[in-house]
Image 1: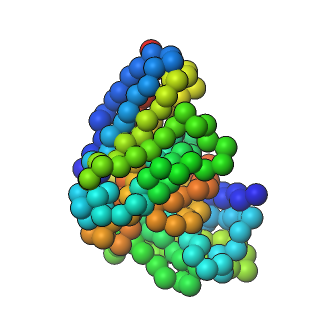
Image 2: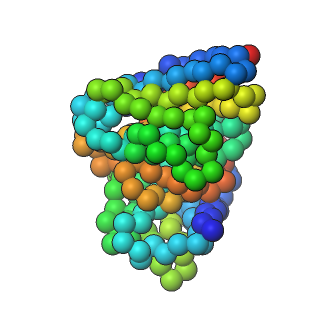
Image 3: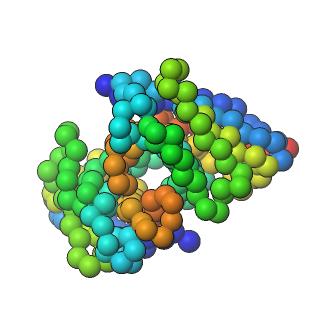
Length: 111
Length: 119
């Protein structure tokens, strides 16, 4: 069982917006602004999409945005495109362990 | 340009020790704040942190696997080595190494290597 809780799946049509949630506790998501989001296509390595809650690395589309409220972080993808179909994982620094924690992953389907 | 690549056996027998090497370029593991971590992903399952080594040789391990893991670095060779003892079929997974720049911030990943544990 993962330390951070994500919905198993979300879906949306091209052009729509979707939001993926990542729920933790005050020891991780709620206590620190060290939340990242990773995109993983089948058979590929994860790719950093968002770091420190809401920052985008260079080269990542501005259709991807991150936010946090309390113990829940969120990844929003606007203007959905077919290429966005992938698994998404959140990660957070935690004071409860020696290493950071991942969420269980969310499969995004673009209808 | 930062790159990382994992290498090691693709098949190990139960009870054997797995040794994986992460060879990287584009950064130095003697630079303050930098770390290299190992993360694994069983087929169809989520990512799982295994171990992390920092520029100052500080080492962190997954609490559930700590007794089986050892992480070391060779700064001159730009390599990080992970050993995992007493391998079991449940350890079958793709093993990734990644460059860690800060809190939960893994900005570059290797391509991963699939390790199968089977007799």
